[in-house]
Amino acid sequence: MPLPQTEMPGRLQAHFADRGIRMTEQRRAILRVMETATKHLDAAQLLRKAQKLDASVDRSTVYRTLRLLKRQGLIDELDLMHIHGEGHYYERKLNRDHIHMACLRCGKIMEFVSDIFEKLKGQVEKDCRFRIVVSRLEIGGYCAACRGAK
Ligand SMILES: [Zn+2]
Ligand SMILES: [Zn+2]
Image (cartoon, rainbow, N blue to C red; front, side, top):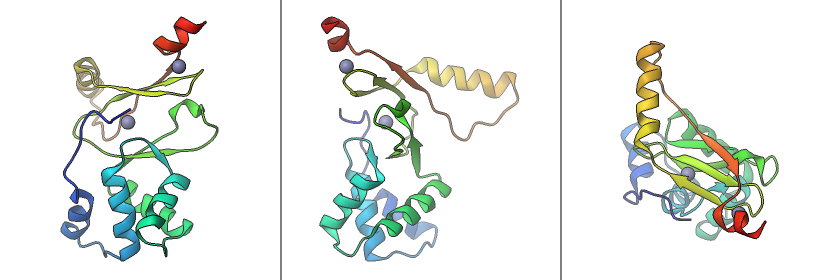
């Protein structure tokens, strides 16, 4: 499933440059994979793809870079209802949050952008006097194809 919004290649790399974060060839390979990902990747998938760009990337570099990206608020970490086990998935942070729907039967992940979710966040901020930095909505259920097959 393609992500609802794409972004300019190089944006994560540009962020690193703006914030004075050291760029290495390994980091560049990992960022490039994140920037061009068309689906949610877990750390193992990220490692495999990054190694195709730079064979010297290893597991610990991937985890360190993911921690750094999370600290910088550049990526989101998802568990996608744990339909594929305990893995965590990463995606670059986009301008608007999207809702993730996970099919508990076929494992398909769907994304949905809704103004109502934006309104809900606005209401939480106003009514609870709470400044939202990160928000996530993950829903588990059955997709149309799986509902039909039941
Ligand atoms: Zn399904
Ligand atoms: Zn997503």
